[in-house]
Amino acid sequence: MKIYRHSNISRQLAAFAAAATVLLANPAHAGVTSYANPLPFSYESQGSQHKDLRDPCIIRDKDTYYAIFTMWPFRNRDEKHFADPDMGSSPGIRMYSTRDFKTWKEEGWLAKSSDLPDNCPYKHQFWAPEIHKLNGKFYLIFTASNWNAKQFNLQEGYYAFIGVADKVTGPYAHITKVPNGPCDSSLFVDAKGEFYLAMPRQDIFVQKVDLGKLDRGIIERVGQEKRVVTFAGSDARDDVNPKYLEGPWVERIGGKFCLFYAECYPNRIGYWTGVAYADNPMGPYTKDSRGKVFFGGHLSIFDGPDGRKWLSYRKERPGIGGGQLCIDPFDIDANGRVRAVDTVNSPVSSK
Image 1 (tube, helix red, strand yellow):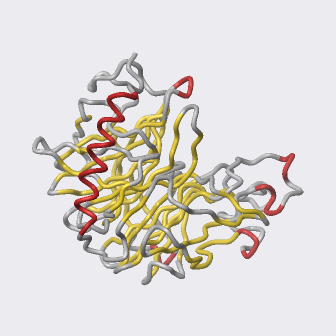
Image 2: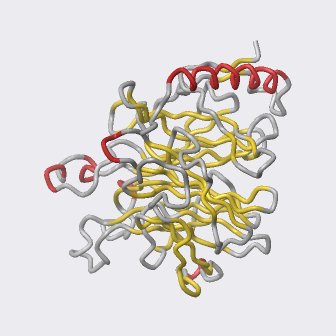
């Protein structure tokens, strides 16, 4: 079983760092001249500072980068913690901004548990938040629940919610539950501007969704959902199958739909990203034959400082810790495949 060859990775990282030095010497965004993973980022949650986070999403708007993520504590519903602040839940979705990936500014709350009414259907959890700029609007999608759902006659369990804003910083209005939308649901559009959901249920599913009535608190899933990527590795060159797939993100690049997804492997051998490609939003999608494409998981794609697409992800390395915010650029090679090498513990600088 091939898991992680340090000698090969070291050579790749050295080559990638050298290339990045040249590319960042004349960045499109003059504020970014260097970066080192994990990024120097921490945040306050429930009275203490934390570096660990989950499910980071970075979006660029003009010359500023905005980050949201799953905040500590990351736990599910647990009655042992009901006396804790916010019943032991993540406190909400707080936004941070940066222009250089070194200094960060708090931008306020997009959703805050303690400010929401007790019967709010998205009162707790606030997992896997994402912001997508689609059709000229900003859409916030996240997973949440109400841990007293039965008391308020709400649907039990956790589901995806979507809200919309005119500005990246919000406020996000008309936050509405996606009917039976699973955890880690993501949102994207086709060339016509029509909306789709990418949804993980061990495998990855895609379905068209109508947001035309969002201002009335209505989201309609259109047609049938379609299984487009399976966790089994029969169509990719892998020695072992992941236990399940999560954290999908679809990015349309050069007319192709690139479906990124996190691969969760048994025995903690790593948290990898796989990619599948399609000409149409509903597929068929073809897995990248390399299987494990990138050593990092639950990523998002954003427009980077050098004109390329970049990804944000959380560091996960067996033996050296995990959960911290990282970024790296990637390219599309001559065969139309994603080419990315992580630079964790390898500073990239133009100086």
